Length: 235
Image (cartoon, rainbow, N blue to C red; front, side):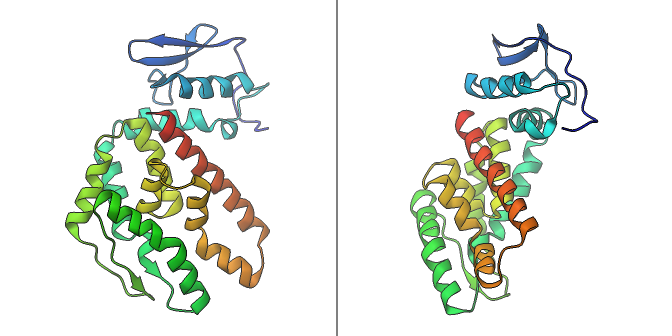
């Protein structure tokens, strides 16, 4: 366990409902974010996860074991205060979506990308009336600006907590399409994560597994699944 974390100073963890949401109390005192804002959660489900993390801390607080608390802090201190910047940043991923950039060879990889990624692009067109252009090799492809604008508008109804989860879904997968499919539960979340790692999985099949890369992949997968849960529970 981390030695730099502060010592546990509380005995009881409770959830208190209020007009703005659910707050976490340590011996009756509210938990605050790093920016000193009161940690208020939008749903009881998220509050329960956050409370469980605080209850699970032992002698010292270990932030690495508190993904729900970290996400809540980000939603309150960063996303809520920089919403437009976050949305603009994610729009950039739509312009260079992972699913638009295909291998020119070998044939087996080309076919695997088609079988895995084309159904996601078809869903995006059917569900959101957005068709992404696809390119092969290293040449860039420009997406239709009207389509990108529609995708940006799809983020407008998201709450700060939902947008926090969505941000991680996009940045971890490298795909706005995959993130939106995960947020809308259009496909199994684990399958969507596998789709985002198709190229990496191919490389492992060809050259073998690197232990450090494998461990990092597992860490990112867990973060992706957590982000999908956060988005769902923030409804």
